[in-house]
Image (cartoon, rainbow, N blue to C red):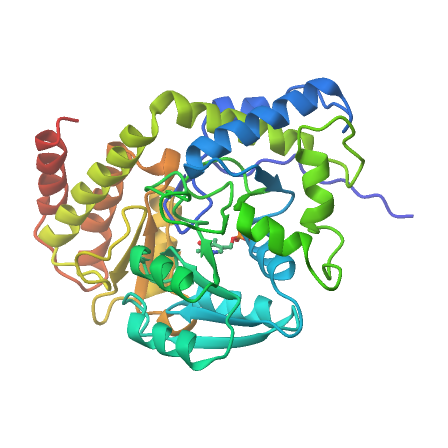
Length: 399
Ligand SMILES: *Cc1c(COP(=O)(O)O)cnc(C)c1O
């Protein structure tokens, strides 16, 4: 056998301002260095109970079934669809971006009938079209939507959709992968039946887990399924026994211990900051960043009123080379931003200010870098204007 020798692992440290992952605080990374425990160890179970407790605070819910799935946000989405749907069901899904499309793709694999409601990318969902589909089918069991559409930067208002779901007796499913921890997600108040998220966006833990919460109504749908969930790994009837505070917690799969530690510490940091202050911080930094963009003459894809604070879809100016700018940001400034995906490829940059990454220094650094790079790439900007506008906005906001 050839053995060879491989260099020591040395990934560079970058400022992560893309659509996720976001930067992780050293406290959270450090949590991953603490000792591994077995999956029945009482100390680990206590830590998991506290994770669930903090997740209830973050999701603003009293749902008993609140836990973290061992996998990224996509597995949370899959868990939702495979547990809530079965052949014979009909689900309506709103699609105004890449992650809505993914939701449809995953839902179809449950064997249920899936009715897609397409809306323009970069705009909120067409509520009337959603209502038409809810009315147009004999019995819709689920309405699924994305709260923070990371492919476009749209923040989807949920009030009216929640009301429609209730009116048609459909479960209300919300993808909060990019919203949880960055803006309000009020599961009980908004009557959400199944909400899933991910570690690495506004929670700022390493990618690895997907926090979920399930209402009693959805739990009883899962309890009364005709057929078994077509996945063993994310079968919530089994998983909840391991996460629940009951006498016997049967083995299901080996808990990703270090990832649970990291999530624990990231949630503890969120609790210390306080939800309201955390959302205000995202708001302040986003507002400053937008004034900076505005001063540089850069425009956003999403109209005012529907913009996320944690993800900005910036229209790439005519004639500017998308890839070159992103490469220069990475290599000359150590800043990672995202490009557009699917039909928005080459049209937008996706700039995230999520969790740990949402801070004034990052806003100013990125604007300064753009001010330097863009004129060299064929797009004139008033020198210093972006940084000045953002600094002024931050000063006015008292930071
Ligand atoms: C990132 C993201 C996902 C997918 O999550 P992964 O952790 O990459 O699997 C799903 N939905 C939205 C809205 C996202 O932003």
